Amino acid sequence: MVIVTLQRNKCIGCNYCVELAPGQFQMSKKDGKSVLLKSNDRKGFHTLKSADHSIQEPCEAAAKACPVKIISVKER
Image (cartoon, rainbow, N blue to C red; front, side, top):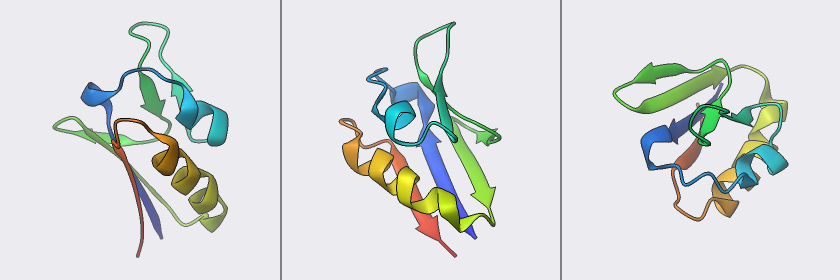
């Protein structure tokens, strides 16, 4: 299980996550912030739990590139 978390309220809209993991992230046309696709929102933390391990590498690259460090990737 791969768990990806995004603290969306701290997003600055740099677009790195979308460039590196377009299958999991997209930019909102409303506010210009990143959206973690198919995630659940809990108090500003958007979490995606997936059994698809192919998303792990691009999401880790997105987390590493994020200038405000608001993306985390864990494996369970």
